[in-house]
Image (cartoon, rainbow, N blue to C red; front, side, top):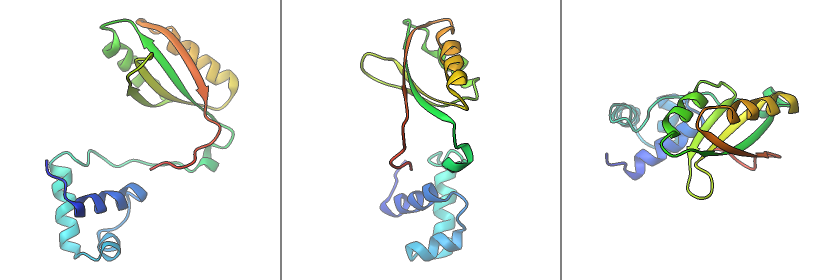
Length: 143
């Protein structure tokens, strides 16, 4: 898949607002509507754009805790651990990483007690060897 500079610009606008209309994107990027429409269609068809999502304003989850949960997994157990984590709605993202941990999950919970329970459930997954958590104090930016 070849992503051009114009494709990157379209993707950048969609990252800011996935509901932006083709006309709005075209005006902002000084491209024709048909050009923007065809680029988005191609990016979807080629799997570059895999879907659209909702970003919830921090105020909507005011009081919720977010934590990066670093997870060490027993060898060859990563797929089953990832599947178990995917089934937990409080786990908003999961990344495979290099270094002393194998996975980093982003957990979201309404209270300290709920976050503690979430980390306990993660630690109880068959194949999880150890977890370490870091509470997110603030987000400086997200894209």
